Image (cartoon, rainbow, N blue to C red; front, side, top):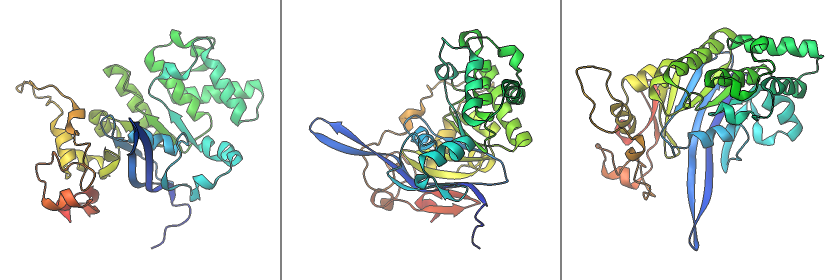
Length: 326
């Protein structure tokens, strides 16, 4: 059955980003994102996590969605419109208004020389036509959604806020435009454990109470499990497994996802964790140019894995990129 034009909020098909890297007198091609395909339904808000260690391509994927990087190939559609075909005016008036970012470091978002409320009023001026009283009401409504008020932050500089408050202001700034989709790139990685859960709970509240879908970019499988509806696990530009978070992290199918899960220390006090956790060492076979990108470390590797790229296979209600399930 053919999809209705408005049935998908975000539709990504074979999105690829290739960087050229000079090494001495030669230039090598590096596929930061390699054929990413997934969608987010309209009128059905969800938190979709893109998970992976450093270098997996998750941030490059987020930057392409936000228009900060141009895809090398593939299609990115938002509400059935090809984003690459939008004019600059259309992007500013429509796409950038409905798709808003929240970045990793809230203090890097704001200049230490400007009061924090300046940025909120600036956002209102850029996207809405309203008087100052109306602007204050709009800003206060956005701040209320993240547990703050304009009175609390008015006249204060970024260094006068805690990390959690600054990140909440970043989210409130994104909410001023009434977005349908928020791209949150590692939004809790610079916060301590107590603040992480408050920000994650805030995202869940935005989804449940304000019908905002969230693309949550993270390397933290614990917050991903707690916050997400679905999860996509990335390995060197590939999405190797994607589906409901309880299924993917509860019973991972792809050997790489299984390896990631096993690398998380158990909370059992009777078990002492002695090994150093370093997810980056799980992916060292960067010299592999053909076949599966995990073939060099996979405990279930077969001959075909070294010769061919595995297909995307639907198994047990999720997608897995592995010959084991062909």
